Length: 193
Image (cartoon, rainbow, N blue to C red; front, side, top):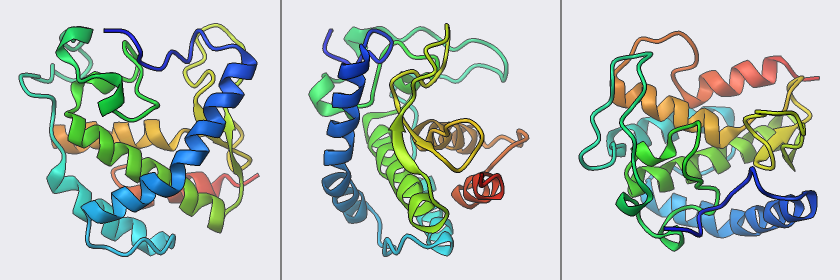
């Protein structure tokens, strides 16, 4: 199945156009996200804890996905096993190094809302701005993807950070690193340039 966003193949003008699309989706995406939880989206640091507490019980792997042992590669998920691009967030790309396909469609939408909310909360309270990841170096993980620039030495991806948090929550893992939205917020805001 084709039609998934291909950040790797985007030109700079296409990446700018995608960022414009992503930002145009922001308001409607956050409204939709707000309907999936009961916490008010106040864009405060404290609200991130409430949001994460509500999101966690709703998370799920894709049906049939069995996570591998930590450090082992996961099973290959073919495009034919996925929903159509129109039924997934616009940033979804497959295959991806982030392994987005392992999450259920509902969880991908929760990652979308949570990531956008985290990003907007950081921008409103700490600074920075949404930007297009543009290192133009071989293998740059966030090439042409929406990232927040101006708060950490390297651009930060709220979407990717939320996907990592979701995987940790689903594995009930005690891995090192952030375990909640507040952890990510504090890590990134402590690095404010």
